[in-house]
Length: 70
Image 1 (tube, rainbow, N blue to C red):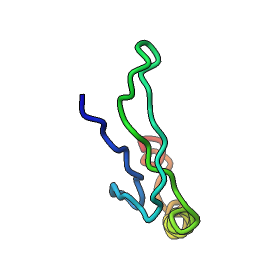
Image 2: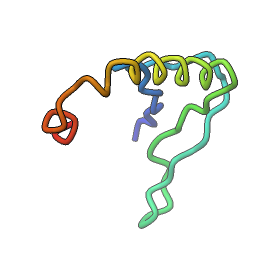
Image 3: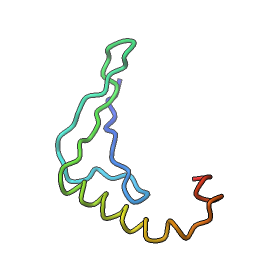
Image 4: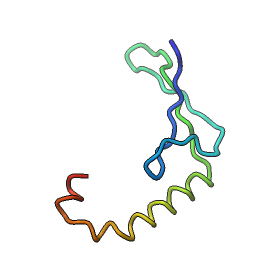
């Protein structure tokens, strides 16, 4: 079985970020490693926060119905 690396999802896109550490992901039923999760570092966190702040500027302008659908 191929082990897939699970990336970050930032600003609407998958990205590996700049962090190099990973954490194994296991199937709880079999104990088999099924993937690895890329761990964020400080720069990845800063990118995520900057993207969230930018999105928050216009989020309130979107109708409640559209926000609820999201």
